[in-house]
Image (cartoon, rainbow, N blue to C red):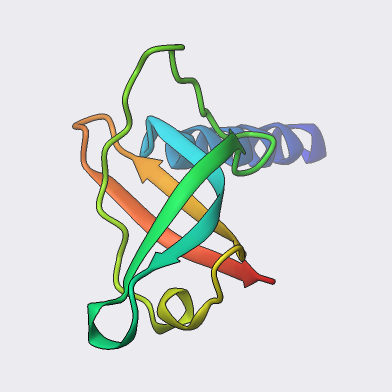
Length: 109
């Protein structure tokens, strides 16, 4: 009886893990640098991304060499307050339907 319970709990754990991975086609950690131009109310903020990796070891983050990833960064006061040259990290998730979600994870100096 114990063997059946262990086998069922192992199967449930594997099924749950695969279901959570099935929700997103891509789950990436993007790292970039903040660049600011202009002054006062005319100041604009730009992020230039220079690296991409899996968000965690089980994530899928495959991108072809010439494939474009276009998305709008969500408004965040931490990004606006970050000095030019700061390093930022974003989590980029895209579902199988192509809907993307981006979250600011950290801002460093």
